Image 1 (tube, rainbow, N blue to C red):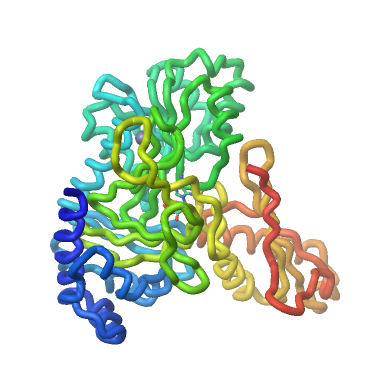
Image 2 (cartoon, rainbow, N blue to C red):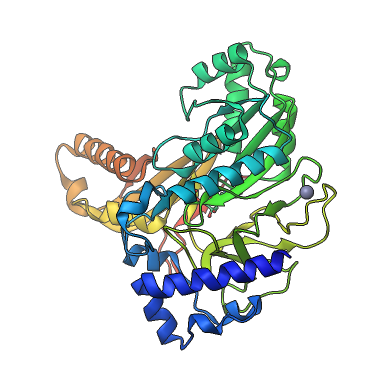
Length: 422
Ligand code: AMP
Ligand code: ZN
């Protein structure tokens, strides 16, 4: 049954992108495949992958499969330089997304009688509005908190008595910590369940969140390119692996080096094909997220396959306080500043529950030779930190160092030290 539906939808989407998206016509032609080659689900393997670079090359709207008059919403994945990824939705896409997010809430045991505190960021990021529409679709009462303003959040948690919370797992810990500092017994709040995602986390973190907040913590997965939050969601009964909404997304795992499709159970890079999206359909999109598929039945009775926690990435993307950051974006900002040398180190750590980013960068001899050295250095540090914040949306501590003091590399440069133990 499901397979028949998937095949029907796959055929339709492949036809549609071939006839409406120039990029797909070109790459299908180059790979000598036509939409008619899809006879079974397995035939998808013969089609080329789509990468984030392809999306950047077609920035901002070049991959859309409908005219702009049919697009009712735009979002963009975080990071404003390096050509972030822009995604679009038709009215029906928004309905589907709301429906799938509502399914996620149902999987978390929520109903219209629940109050949902939504602390995912509202804005270009898909988290806030995605969860919001899903909560409304369910009929629950949604509190559109967005991120930040932690003290106020704690007050609302106490006064409005939400039964569920949505945010990043690190922000959940942050809330717990601040609440405790304010003398609030966080375990005695009405919260029952939390829906956490948008960044990697571990079973250890799950236990910690469950302990400090006295709730059940569930994992939700998604990415803007494929839809936003709600591509896959854990269920309350299983609490192991996230059910993928396979009636809307086909999933494969591949070897990131060779592109070869791996059997279920083996760890590899997740590749998604959207089979119902109208505005921005993607065929075989390489997510760079590493995980594995779980095909064993789940205790909850859902027959949708599951994906394991994201175990890492096959590229160098970092997620810092929920913001996606590529080292190349930081490099581009650094190198645009006069006096900065192309030698830098990024040190990512976690202070308490908050991610921190330190950028160490070398400056040229002439900067140090300057009479007002200290002032000049401070100004430069401030300028760099401001540019990073303005362009990428993350706060960074910038430390300028003397020429030739940072490590040099003989092979591939390794400029990132990620010291977070999550
Ligand atoms: P964005 O498009 O900005 O929402 O970022 C999507 C990326 O966030 C994904 O490709 C993953 O790398 C990461 N992500 C989202 N949800 C999770 C999750 N539950 N666990 C780990 N990483 C996640
Ligand atoms: Zn389940």
